[in-house]
Length: 381
Image (cartoon, rainbow, N blue to C red; front, side):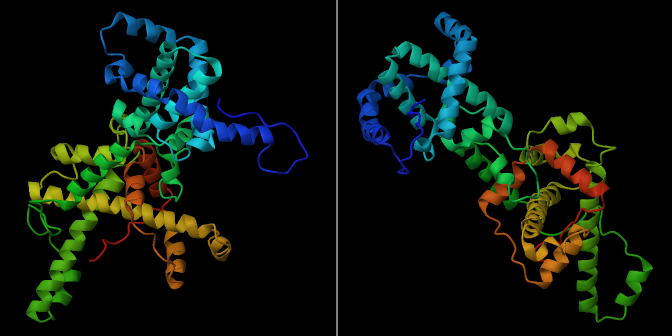
């Protein structure tokens, strides 16, 4: 909307003379109308954007926004904000204000019409973002959305858990990301939680084949070894219950999958209603908190190892070696070469836990059915 169309020319310079002049004048044109547009945009409220205000004028505006011509204008503005290099580091509000200033300068559009445009853009983006992050953002959140992220709304990429590109397929506002990071920290911290793999019903029995060799060990060493074996048995049983039974394609009901927009929403549901999940039943509150923290860390860990394998498979060193090999074998080859692990950054953690829950469930089920689901050991065991 705000760029001058390029013409065919033999001139190899980056900008034609007219483009150079336009670029020099662009900030001046925007500043000419900024105060007016800023005041108009600042006067918007959540009720205006959600359409919940009981206002006859708003009802008329919302009806007008449904017209094909207005829908086309809204789409054009969003495409411009997503693609124009001027807005690659701008927020949605910053880019939108600039575009409206240029629209008023170039076409003399009335402020009332511009207000209709901005409400329409915010409403469209709010709906799209809400469907992606699982919660509709407030107007304040929308304003801070990076304009560059709009491209992910216009041309969505199917999220692929366990790949380096998962981050680029997700859409969320900065404030939503902050809330998620706080939730992740809360679940990980597990105040008043247990500190080890224990069962409320007591220690599970070990088989005779395991118990008899332990009797030959010194007492202190026997107790510690037995404790580790029991801990490993409890841990393994818990993860089998989650990944092989609860998430089984034959057992998991579609309504359970559809109930959770993201993996993190599912974990928060377990946190608040643990008694509804069979793999949490029979445990006291402290043990439930510990298991949930371990499950969260495990999902991130699984994403990291599969993303690492995916990244390595793109390199010529492994491309041929990985042929016809499953993930565990590929990891063994990489371990021999001391292939570095991926840094578990907040971004990687967010991408794993904000993966859409249905996509993640499908990924787990497919891997399990293909007998290519690798469950790594707990870190720092």
